[in-house]
Length: 334
Ligand code: KG4
Ligand code: ZN
View 1 (tube, rainbow, N blue to C red):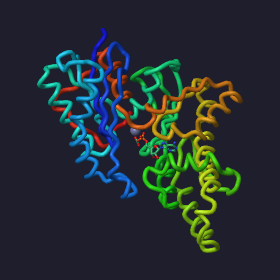
View 2: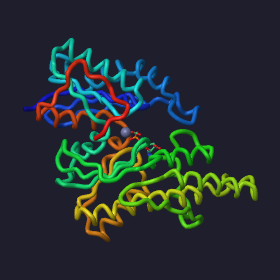
View 3: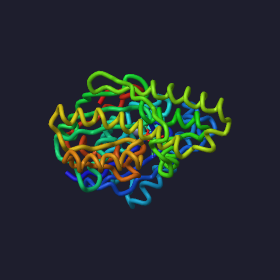
């Protein structure tokens, strides 16, 4: 079975479409919504409207650049959740209408599963079972991946996601949204030992990132009282020290999870897996622990339809189709 599938992603602030043919992702068209920048975060209502404007041009471009006609499609895939409900509704409704008019199957995809399955778009591919640290703007999870569609969450954040910690800290530094990539950029030039931020101790394999965010807020307040230009004068060192603390917390539980499960095939996924400091630390640990590590190509780290397409491919092969009355789910477990 070598299906040709159109995949649509609209869970947050990226409208994206991709075509997969014979298990190969042919393209990955992404329209990023800049409308949120000035608000310092994603505004759900504006995200839905922007998806509504972008969805047709993005799909048309995906079909055109792949040289695929609508009538050649074997299925339509879409992100069912988790995500912003209004944003998900745009992709879901569009996918349902297309599947109905073309009379072909509809495939719902779980966005968090798709972030992990992005590892099967290009080589090298991890072998089962592997451990995946999924780090995004909405999630921080440790997942044992037993098979393409068989995954178990063994640890997760009890409050903020690590991407949220990056973005909210960046906001305190008066950086535009999303601040994660900017912290990464400044951190590369800074001294990571300049300031010390404490870890939040959590039992087992769970995470907590709300404590460090609050500690960071008080740290900046106190430093600014002494020197109003503290942030401007020390941006690189502040970002490097904060990033180091966040990565240390991520890695601590990842190491524990690897010890407890005995799994040394280690992957990272999600928007924060684009972080250069995290990638470097993972490489260092690979040497120290004898891990095989897997990091997705940058275009498949942050939200994209390529990952929805590969997930849909595996679902198609297993005959896992959705009914046309399916509706999106803002909260959806792996
Ligand atoms: O997976 P994603 O695109 O969307 C969600 O599903 O949430 O992840 C977005 C998150 C944002 O918090 C963004 O700041 C973060 O990924 N991010 C980064 C980097 N690139 C994206 N965080 C740190 N360093 C980066 N280079
Ligand atoms: Zn995502």
